[in-house]
Image (tube, rainbow, N blue to C red):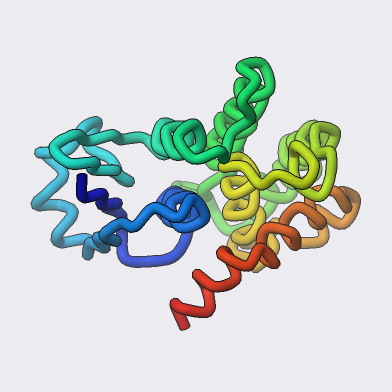
Length: 200
Protein backbone atom coordinates (compact mmCIF):
# COMPACT_ATOMS: atom_id res chain seq x y z
CA UNK A 1 0.00 0.00 0.00
CA UNK A 2 1.16 3.56 -0.70
CA UNK A 3 1.87 5.55 2.46
CA UNK A 4 1.68 9.32 2.73
CA UNK A 5 2.08 11.83 5.53
CA UNK A 6 0.27 15.16 5.30
CA UNK A 7 1.38 18.20 7.30
CA UNK A 8 2.22 21.85 6.87
CA UNK A 9 5.17 22.89 4.72
CA UNK A 10 7.82 23.33 7.39
CA UNK A 11 10.19 21.07 9.31
CA UNK A 12 9.03 21.24 12.88
CA UNK A 13 6.55 20.14 15.52
CA UNK A 14 4.29 17.12 15.06
CA UNK A 15 4.89 16.78 11.34
CA UNK A 16 8.66 16.57 11.72
CA UNK A 17 8.30 13.91 14.42
CA UNK A 18 6.31 11.68 12.08
CA UNK A 19 8.50 12.35 9.05
CA UNK A 20 11.60 11.43 11.03
CA UNK A 21 9.97 8.30 12.48
CA UNK A 22 8.98 7.06 9.03
CA UNK A 23 12.44 7.86 7.67
CA UNK A 24 14.24 6.09 10.54
CA UNK A 25 11.89 3.12 10.13
CA UNK A 26 12.88 2.90 6.46
CA UNK A 27 9.30 3.34 5.29
CA UNK A 28 8.97 4.98 1.84
CA UNK A 29 6.28 7.65 1.99
CA UNK A 30 4.90 10.60 0.10
CA UNK A 31 5.66 13.77 2.03
CA UNK A 32 2.58 15.91 1.39
CA UNK A 33 3.21 19.52 2.48
CA UNK A 34 0.28 21.91 2.60
CA UNK A 35 0.07 25.68 2.48
CA UNK A 36 -2.31 27.33 4.94
CA UNK A 37 -4.73 27.93 2.08
CA UNK A 38 -4.66 24.27 1.02
CA UNK A 39 -5.23 23.23 4.62
CA UNK A 40 -8.33 25.38 4.98
CA UNK A 41 -9.85 23.63 1.97
CA UNK A 42 -8.92 20.16 3.25
CA UNK A 43 -9.67 20.64 6.96
CA UNK A 44 -13.42 19.84 6.90
CA UNK A 45 -12.67 16.44 5.33
CA UNK A 46 -10.06 15.32 7.88
CA UNK A 47 -10.31 13.22 11.05
CA UNK A 48 -10.48 15.58 14.06
CA UNK A 49 -9.80 18.59 11.79
CA UNK A 50 -6.09 18.46 12.53
CA UNK A 51 -2.71 17.52 11.07
CA UNK A 52 -0.64 15.39 10.69
CA UNK A 53 -2.49 12.60 8.91
CA UNK A 54 -0.95 9.28 7.94
CA UNK A 55 -2.60 7.52 5.00
CA UNK A 56 -1.90 3.84 4.47
CA UNK A 57 -3.76 2.82 1.35
CA UNK A 58 -7.39 3.74 1.92
CA UNK A 59 -6.95 4.03 5.69
CA UNK A 60 -6.28 7.28 7.55
CA UNK A 61 -4.76 7.82 10.98
CA UNK A 62 -4.71 11.20 12.71
CA UNK A 63 -3.04 12.49 15.89
CA UNK A 64 0.74 12.52 16.03
CA UNK A 65 1.10 10.23 19.06
CA UNK A 66 -1.14 7.60 17.47
CA UNK A 67 0.92 7.82 14.28
CA UNK A 68 4.18 7.52 16.20
CA UNK A 69 2.91 4.53 18.18
CA UNK A 70 1.74 2.84 14.97
CA UNK A 71 5.15 3.34 13.35
CA UNK A 72 6.96 2.36 16.53
CA UNK A 73 5.10 -0.92 17.01
CA UNK A 74 5.44 -1.90 13.38
CA UNK A 75 9.12 -1.11 12.95
CA UNK A 76 10.91 -1.78 16.22
CA UNK A 77 10.86 1.83 17.41
CA UNK A 78 8.95 1.04 20.61
CA UNK A 79 9.99 -1.50 23.24
CA UNK A 80 8.47 -4.97 22.77
CA UNK A 81 7.59 -5.22 26.46
CA UNK A 82 4.10 -3.73 26.99
CA UNK A 83 5.06 -1.97 30.23
CA UNK A 84 8.15 -0.38 28.72
CA UNK A 85 6.19 0.61 25.60
CA UNK A 86 3.62 2.31 27.82
CA UNK A 87 6.41 4.23 29.57
CA UNK A 88 7.54 5.53 26.18
CA UNK A 89 3.99 6.44 25.23
CA UNK A 90 3.74 8.40 28.50
CA UNK A 91 6.70 10.45 27.29
CA UNK A 92 4.86 11.13 24.01
CA UNK A 93 1.91 12.46 26.00
CA UNK A 94 4.14 14.55 28.25
CA UNK A 95 5.53 16.39 25.23
CA UNK A 96 2.00 17.32 24.20
CA UNK A 97 1.42 18.55 27.77
CA UNK A 98 4.53 20.72 27.37
CA UNK A 99 3.22 22.21 24.14
CA UNK A 100 -0.08 23.13 25.80
CA UNK A 101 1.51 24.56 28.95
CA UNK A 102 3.76 27.08 27.16
CA UNK A 103 2.12 30.50 27.69
CA UNK A 104 1.28 31.82 24.21
CA UNK A 105 1.08 35.46 25.26
CA UNK A 106 -2.19 36.11 23.48
CA UNK A 107 -4.08 39.01 25.01
CA UNK A 108 -1.13 39.89 27.25
CA UNK A 109 1.15 42.88 27.35
CA UNK A 110 4.76 42.15 26.50
CA UNK A 111 5.71 42.52 30.17
CA UNK A 112 3.02 40.05 31.22
CA UNK A 113 4.08 37.59 28.53
CA UNK A 114 7.70 37.86 29.69
CA UNK A 115 6.73 37.26 33.32
CA UNK A 116 4.51 34.28 32.41
CA UNK A 117 7.17 32.62 30.28
CA UNK A 118 9.92 33.19 32.81
CA UNK A 119 7.73 31.61 35.50
CA UNK A 120 6.96 28.71 33.15
CA UNK A 121 10.68 28.15 32.46
CA UNK A 122 11.61 28.21 36.13
CA UNK A 123 8.65 26.11 37.22
CA UNK A 124 6.67 23.77 34.98
CA UNK A 125 9.29 23.38 32.25
CA UNK A 126 12.11 22.69 34.70
CA UNK A 127 10.00 20.10 36.53
CA UNK A 128 9.12 18.43 33.22
CA UNK A 129 12.79 18.33 32.24
CA UNK A 130 13.78 16.81 35.59
CA UNK A 131 11.07 14.15 35.37
CA UNK A 132 11.99 13.12 31.83
CA UNK A 133 15.71 13.22 32.60
CA UNK A 134 15.25 10.70 35.38
CA UNK A 135 13.79 8.24 32.83
CA UNK A 136 16.70 8.41 30.35
CA UNK A 137 19.06 5.43 30.50
CA UNK A 138 21.42 7.15 28.05
CA UNK A 139 22.00 8.13 25.43
CA UNK A 140 18.37 7.29 24.48
CA UNK A 141 15.47 6.56 26.81
CA UNK A 142 16.04 2.80 26.67
CA UNK A 143 19.83 2.93 26.31
CA UNK A 144 21.28 2.30 22.87
CA UNK A 145 17.96 1.68 21.08
CA UNK A 146 16.35 4.70 19.38
CA UNK A 147 12.56 4.96 19.77
CA UNK A 148 9.77 7.21 18.57
CA UNK A 149 9.74 8.79 22.03
CA UNK A 150 13.37 9.84 21.56
CA UNK A 151 12.43 11.36 18.21
CA UNK A 152 9.56 13.33 19.74
CA UNK A 153 11.81 14.57 22.54
CA UNK A 154 14.43 15.58 19.98
CA UNK A 155 11.93 17.66 18.01
CA UNK A 156 10.57 19.56 21.02
CA UNK A 157 14.07 20.11 22.45
CA UNK A 158 15.27 21.30 19.04
CA UNK A 159 12.74 24.13 19.12
CA UNK A 160 13.63 25.20 22.66
CA UNK A 161 17.39 24.97 22.13
CA UNK A 162 17.06 27.10 18.99
CA UNK A 163 15.54 29.91 21.08
CA UNK A 164 12.20 29.71 19.31
CA UNK A 165 10.23 30.97 22.30
CA UNK A 166 10.81 34.47 23.64
CA UNK A 167 11.86 34.62 27.30
CA UNK A 168 12.53 30.88 27.52
CA UNK A 169 16.32 30.63 27.17
CA UNK A 170 18.04 27.47 25.99
CA UNK A 171 20.11 27.64 29.17
CA UNK A 172 17.09 26.26 31.06
CA UNK A 173 18.30 22.83 29.94
CA UNK A 174 21.90 23.26 31.11
CA UNK A 175 20.96 21.52 34.37
CA UNK A 176 19.75 18.46 32.48
CA UNK A 177 22.73 16.90 30.69
CA UNK A 178 20.85 13.67 29.93
CA UNK A 179 18.28 15.60 27.90
CA UNK A 180 21.01 17.47 26.04
CA UNK A 181 22.85 14.20 25.37
CA UNK A 182 19.66 12.58 24.05
CA UNK A 183 19.09 15.53 21.73
CA UNK A 184 22.68 15.27 20.48
CA UNK A 185 22.44 11.50 20.01
CA UNK A 186 19.27 11.73 17.91
CA UNK A 187 20.77 14.58 15.84
CA UNK A 188 23.87 12.44 15.21
CA UNK A 189 21.89 9.35 14.18
CA UNK A 190 22.93 8.70 10.55
CA UNK A 191 19.38 8.58 9.22
CA UNK A 192 18.30 11.71 11.11
CA UNK A 193 21.43 13.59 10.04
CA UNK A 194 20.83 12.43 6.47
CA UNK A 195 17.26 13.69 6.54
CA UNK A 196 18.35 17.21 7.47
CA UNK A 197 21.25 17.16 5.02
CA UNK A 198 18.79 16.29 2.27
CA UNK A 199 16.52 19.19 3.22
CA UNK A 200 19.21 21.86 2.71
